[in-house]
Length: 57
Image (cartoon, rainbow, N blue to C red; front, side):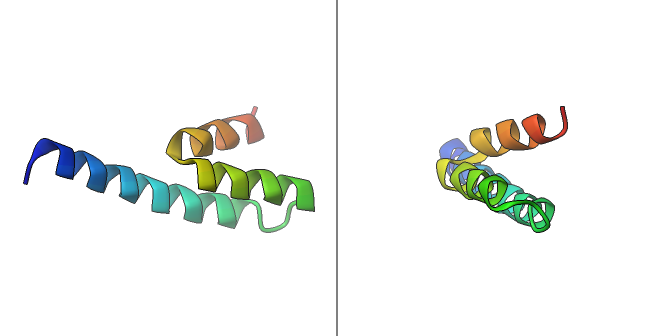
């Protein structure tokens, strides 16, 4: 495998794992917070990290 294949695979794994973590964390939250979580998942892993970071500050 090439380096970029491994990097893409890692990116996808992080995306899926982050999506599961955000869904689990936002299950009991108000609608606006759940919409922010969905937007973070659609944008990608960097937005997921930002969302989770802002939730715990």
